[in-house]
Image (cartoon, rainbow over all chains, first blue to last red; front, side, top):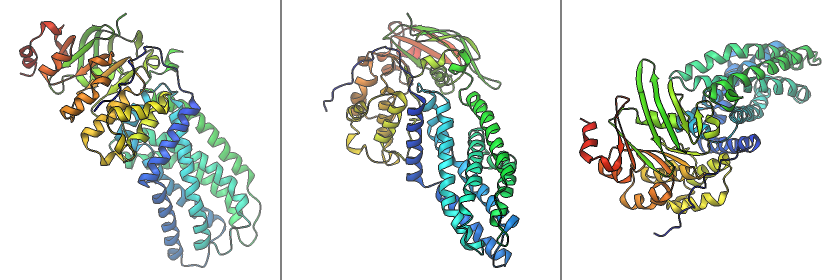
Length: 250
Length: 225
């Protein structure tokens, strides 16, 4: 076979690829891998729906509301999220994606951002399935009127779960006991998110006297997201670059 | 200026010494072939030179950059072909190469040309898990040279390749590529034919460091006894 060889190396220093382009490349790859394997999102969604079915029969009552409804919703969503967190870096660790990324002239934070956005996307899809299922199986009344207000705690909790989940997944994936270590590390850190999200959304799920959203719990969730966002950014940089990044030289 | 300047390189894994006191120098366009039995430290040496592992001692300069301090400046200039292909099994050859091309800021045209160069273009759309090991190795070779690296680090690059495939990839990773190369090999005759400089490792220490012209196949075989 006669093929023309690519030109010999030029020896010119390589230009760093912009973070935005690197994130876009990583995101595209993440979504392609998930579409091919269907390992995370279907498992998360199925887990949530199955849990609501179990609650529906186990509680043996027509409907739930208020604190109980909020507790069931958020605990189920967080456990379902753990399934996605556990799988987040598995393909990279098992198939050399970490090494390939570290060999590329891209900012290390691109991986953090891409994984965070990926997990966030998984959570949004999970909630598109789980929230209607929750309404159908466990709420007596329709969720329709409360839904616009419920979007704020959902969004803030998703950001918190994605931030913490990405860090935990990155730490756990290199250990042999990652399936155990992931939940053990993540669940204590998720507790403030459960509390904040459940307290913020409980008034919305009270059928008798539905009242407005608890703003101070939304603020708490927002602050938690911000603080953990900064912590995770610092830890992830240090962890993923093996202490040998550009930051070490500056 | 030498592409590789290594002086007193040491690397441990816990208590176990993987490399100790390794020193060498390699000029541009030359080929260093590393021989040694399993566990001698060949792969560790490649990973340190690729900036994927921190050395525990020694002065290492790759492409004029001091490691690990300036490893960010080396990235994108080194091509690594290890035991793992660094490719996603669920993606096709083309999707894998496009992903790496985007990470390295390389145009899509080069992806097509490399797929043709390694004769994978007809099966470029199939998931990697459906390809044979030899085909995956060819895609991995295309991935390693995708960004036109100045230095190639190759760990048994011809593993799983049939003679026709070895000829096929020669313009990319062979001597005719014009690249500076570090090759780990277990094949004394083939390795010596490729080498300008020979490094023999035994238990992480230098057992042989000579110009290839001064090394006989028996000297290499002796490393494995």
